[in-house]
Length: 170
Image 1 (cartoon, rainbow, N blue to C red):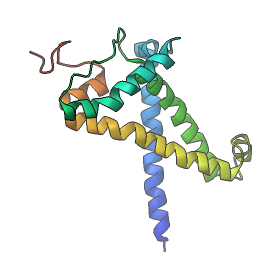
Image 2: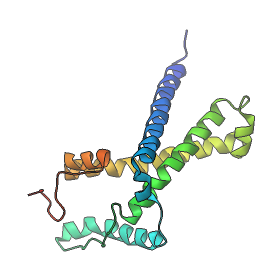
Image 3: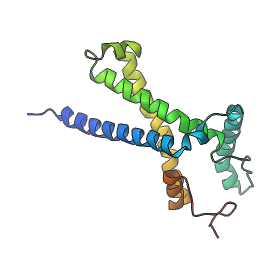
Image 4: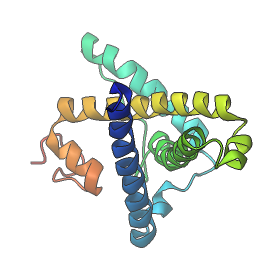
């Protein structure tokens, strides 16, 4: 008879393999489509990312106060915060996969566990990486509900039916 924990582990591995497949497809799509070029960091990205964080932090309060809150100028496909985030996610995904394997097979992959600081450290990294993914996914889901399904299309495909400068695309 299976223990109750084994079915949870089965679900965990199902999502882990879906996560890995998604990551591979994402990287292949970036490489074949040339989209990786838009994600390469620029010298001004740290300063511009801080500017975008200030904008996003104040946007909610500006909406409540019904005050104008000007968006920082963006001259590229992605703003600096998006570029840093979309570059960091594949790196974090790779680390999540490596830490996952290190804690799943610590004896067979002892060298990987050792490279990651040991079994316990790999577990801590794996746990915190899941929190990082939640911090990345939750705002995107909120954005889709707040801004509409065209936002979902633009997240998935990189294009939108809206024209630049209008909220309703007309």
